[in-house]
Length: 241
Image 1 (cartoon, rainbow, N blue to C red):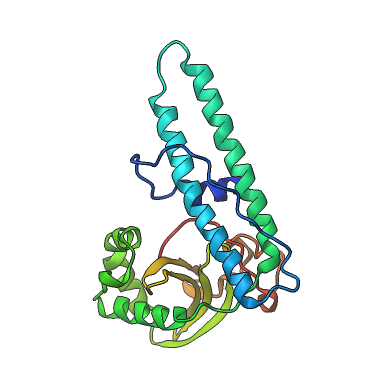
Image 2 (image 1 turned 90 degrees about the vertical axis):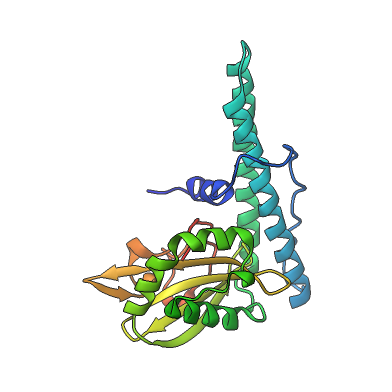
């Protein structure tokens, strides 16, 4: 069974190159009690947490590079120190994630539904606008574009897009219904409207596309104890469309 630590590692380390920044531990994100905070203040906390996780990606990637490069007589001790720093970073990020749980759900980010509908339409047509994606998302999408085009067209006509919640990474989570089934889709946007995250949760039962929330083995992290009408999103699992 996948643990929170494993899932958190998958986000912190996924898609990173060895050209990491200096190994500087990022400043801990402030996550005050949300009671009494305005939506604007809650959004500001969300943005700080998202920036914190991005900084943690660079920090842990740098540590991993140093672990691989460690050599000499003192290498075992040095690696042990670096591994301990890695473990401490993951534990800290887990604590931030837990504290942020009180902020969920938040209203949808402006423009996220329109961006999701546009993305689905582009996949269906097989014509993706990479200018509206961040470089890392664009790089990933280029690898799966053809396969996902075939999948999207096999699902039938898009019928509805329903907002569920906003996750700790700042992405909005939607329930997307097609003629032949339903899936969950996360979409994140930069301040200038580019797609910074695009990830789907798809579940097949009996050859049919079904709601991932209705099947325990398919539910994203933190959905296991919730009914479909009590959805909140704290998923830190990696992945893309």
